[in-house]
Length: 319
Image 1 (cartoon, rainbow, N blue to C red):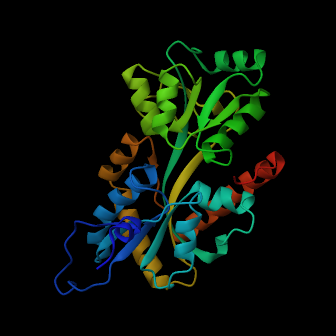
Image 2: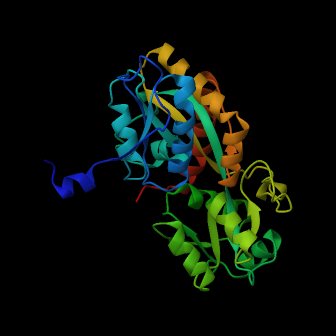
């Protein structure tokens, strides 16, 4: 019998609620590996997707959390798994856009994976307190007048939200100071307590503060305005080249069977392009995507080519 410590240390697994089809009671499940702890945007996306894609896939789908080391632990696990299409990674922008450029001796390569589909994109909300700057130009004027004194919360120097703000700083020729937190809750508490000037967070957190009147979204870092929040501009409205958003996508180990990749892709895309999934993603401040494996592969190449030069220029290294 496993010890309590072993049970607590085991990866968190949740089975899809979809029942197997007749004759498939013993079918081997497809496991979506989430390289983050339960509860975050990636985990929510994986669970919503898993619940709905089991039926069109014709196989049970489960979610397994393998967090740690800025997604490296989960990604490395999938890269080393049997290339049979039954172990799937839900990667974020950090996994394949950021880490390959800044993590020394990274244990996996982009070539270790075969793309399946782009699931969604997630822009960041730049959030101030209600008594803070009224809009983005006012923030930038204040930042220019007080270099290095305006603080914003991030998940670490090499996190995507910090990199997004470094791009904003560079575009507006200002310098704001990042402050590292382990999660959104501590950042929100410090913002509301007046100990932090700004948040740079995913849509769900930003929208909750904005709609509740405890924060004000000054701008979105994505490429299109947020439905239901269209009055808030994009950073790109002021600086057209400044688009900074993370993404979520499904990949399998390289050399997985092409037929299985296509089967998973078609099942996932059927779900992703449905109104129900799109609505759930918008509630989380994300935009549903859906793509062929080839389209997702081209997307990965474009993202790497876009962010690589900036990361080298900033000389960032993973902490």
